[in-house]
Image (cartoon, rainbow, N blue to C red):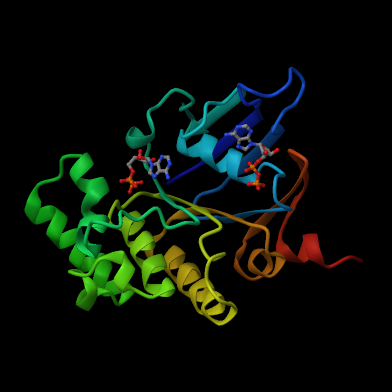
Length: 229
Ligand code: ADP
Ligand code: ADP
């Protein structure tokens, strides 16, 4: 069971003017196994909000609760969260295996467990034959799968994805959209997905959070948000 409460969250970056908030009064209750999509134009605060949930940015004001527990001050690696980044954030000098294993090594898993988990994720993602390759020797879609693999091996109940498909061509985006939706189902995760693409939001989300200039404009199902009466 996962429940995430974002209670009146604000973010002001250290170098910003006094009253210039990147995120203002973001208030949302996320239910177990929901697929939530944050959508809105570039610069509206989607990524900042996601990074606050991951602990990669401090929360200026407000509280983050996961299953009722106050998490504002928990270190990123101690959160039960796996994150997928837009630029894949793969290490170029490491093999696919080592890229997928990195977060597990960091958390001191033993070698056998790491191998089991990486092999399992590679199988799910069709990467078993590529484990010895370096990222440069992969296609864009394969790289994105490695990034997903790093998240999968964590067995985290919460997945955060920041524009994971924006570097892929249109055709591959459609394929990967379906793959991510399927992973969400199969892994039973609660997922928060950031995109500026309305089609992605519409086809993937249980609920959409529409943002504009740091503020939440609307929260609802794809039907509620995109079907004007
Ligand atoms: P989005 O993900 O919707 O594109 P962001 O969350 O990246 O939006 O950015 C929201 C606002 O915060 C923008 O005005 C952006 O310029 C600003 N911002 C983002 N990151 C930083 C940072 N590290 N330092 C200062 N301002 C930032
Ligand atoms: P994980 O698979 O758990 O994310 P990583 O090896 O990717 O492990 O990252 C280790 C730590 O560094 C994690 O706490 C993660 O949140 C953080 N991290 C990963 N990528 C980035 C990034 N691009 N920018 C900032 N922090 C990152």
